[in-house]
Amino acid sequence: MANLLSATVQVKDPEKLQVYVSQVGATMAPHGGKMVARGKVAKQISGEVKHQIEAMFEFPSVEAIDTWYASDAYQALIPNRDEAAYVTIVVLNPF
Image (cartoon, rainbow, N blue to C red; front, side, top):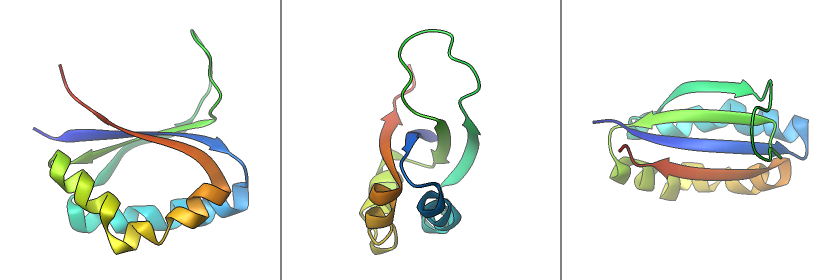
C-alpha cells in the first residue's frame, strides 16, 4: 500500500517558494515519490486555516519517505524552503 505525505504551506516569499517547488519533485523521484495533488486553498469550510497551499505526495513506503527527507538532495533545499514559507510536513497513516 502506498503511503501519503501531506504538506501545508504558509507563504513568506513567493519567488523563493517557486524555486523550491521547481526543485522538490526531482528529489522525490529517486525514492518513488510523486505528487498526487497540489492546490491553493479556495474556501475555508471549518476550522482555522493559516496556510495558502496544500500538497499531497505518494511514496511506496514510510521508509522511502524517511530516506527522501534525509537525502542530501532534499536537505540542500531546506534553507530555501524555510526562507520561502512555513511548511508543515506529515505522514498519513491510513485507517
